[in-house]
Length: 287
Image 1: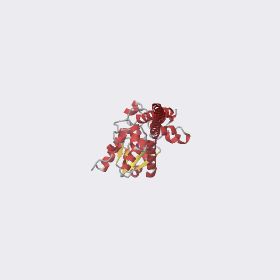
Image 2: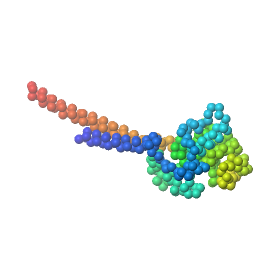
Image 3: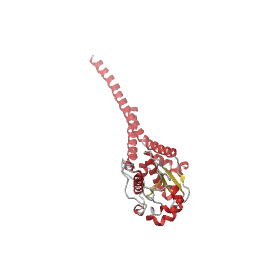
Image 4: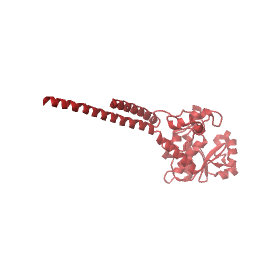
């Protein structure tokens, strides 16, 4: 009886574990999409999608590549692999939650936490620091693409800082501005542009209607968005939950196999226990 119960529990647990493992693996394997695609108008627009970044290492500096040329290539590559889209005006709204909340197929643990009041504000409008996670989602505001650029540079030991004003967010590195929201590289420091915002006119020429807003933004006092320690901490948090999401399915699978094995062992012992008296009886009759 106990053996049969353990086998049944083992099969059930292994089945649950297999189902959960398939669920967790579906997004990494490309079987499902964890996030909705933005409207075609946003994908094809001036801040839309150009080419997916297949490998994060493609964003790293090549051997002997001049620094300025590399920073410009990084800026345009990240811009081309991400879509900038707002559902209501030019600021985050509740309607953006399907895009900015961590998807259930991406990490169901963080998805569950996003419904709790203490995590709702952060996890319903979440920006990844891990470049691959953000690029796979493919959608982000200026602060999100800046975090991608910053992280790629930081991984290579290249000094960079994310700066922000209410209207915009960019990265500054090696005395240049990397704006991967617009895909614009400005070979001038923020300090220089702040003193003379008209410097940006030629670089943002294709975004003419946005120039007044951009001049106003660049003329302000930019503030660092965070410290290296802050971003390292967030990235470690993301890595931890990326590992944790595999724990429940593997635990169910492991316990299922263990319970089934114990049940089979007990069943084998029960059979042996029944066979021994039978043999004793046969031996006694024959003697």
